Length: 211
Image (cartoon, rainbow, N blue to C red; front, side, top):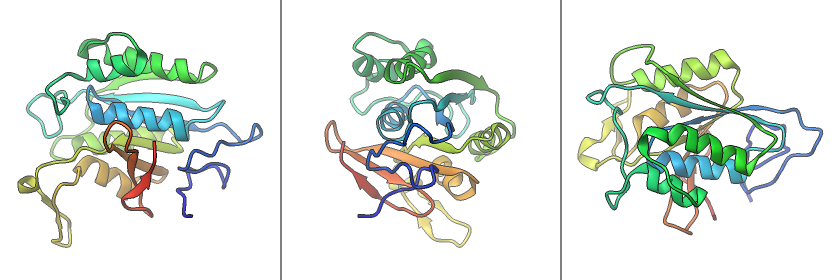
């Protein structure tokens, strides 16, 4: 069965295989936003990608509310990201504290991990400002695994690639990072409560992984 190489030299896979104790620690960056997509990405990373000794950076880009990709993402039922994280942690959380709540979730799952939650301002302007900022941050920090929640967009808002092919329903930020990241970049979309995850990387498309 095919698996996604998570940058451990064959030591870990998207099927949940853990690395050996001698594997060199990595720096894993998880894109943090107040929404269910980001929560799903964190859940997958903590369960299937992060190993003992890894360092974790939770990165949030402070995009303006009216910018593409700006503003908080909401759940399909109208609830906030705080409720999604609250379920994951068994407590309560609001949008204003989502970064600290996500940091606490990482520490709860991997107590020995060094976890940093950081907010940064967009480095550029325009449609790809968020993606370009995340890319620059991941490269400057030497990130080895980048994880981002994959947000579905309505088909009538579909984008077109440089070659003119339609990319309806694809998250442009996730697609940009998958295409341009020098490290392994995995976009994560949760399919139902217990249906598993749909993963995308540069070499794997629509890779199905059971929860």
